[in-house]
Image (cartoon, rainbow, N blue to C red; front, side, top):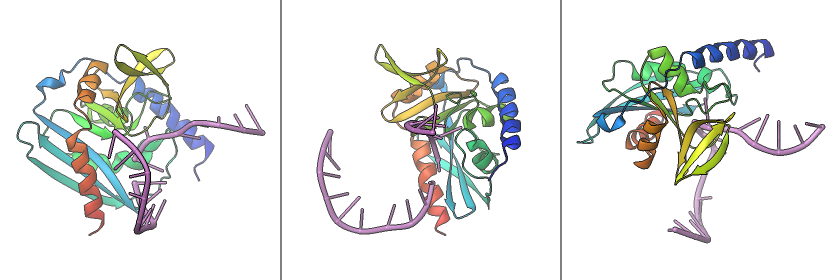
Length: 198
DNA sequence: GCGACAG
DNA sequence: ATCTTGTCGC
């Protein structure tokens, strides 16, 4: 159980993170090496894996980190549960764009886990989620956007949601979404479950 | 009060 | 996320 005053405090931090999110076009068509991070659990143990992949060759290498996780999952505060271990797993990896399992600014306070990690590391990030957290879906010329308070904060391709974390824009998310679910995240997810079995 | 609710 | 076999569908 997490006290109300702590969540209110965390909300203040999220507003500060959101204020520091930089939305600008990155141009992911030029990205050669991309990273992805995910986590799997076994009780209170979290197994996070960060993968760095060469877009052209498909070659990749990864780093993992195991640690105890006690903060509960609370919609809107996922970062408190997963960001610490995710950051540990990806530090040192070589790439210029990081994909995070979860939302970016498609969040009630525009501070999803991909935005938090992007701002803390001052690095380009895009959030890729398997389901909706907030916002309304609106179709506009072949594309499904996620609207929050009259603003486009993400897009949906297939069954996945893509939203800016930091230093990228909606166009980058659209270009990523068009490629289908990122292989680097699929590999991270696979390694994450494999490692927890050992 | 009721429904929604990333992983 | 995780607990879990076979099974319906593209």
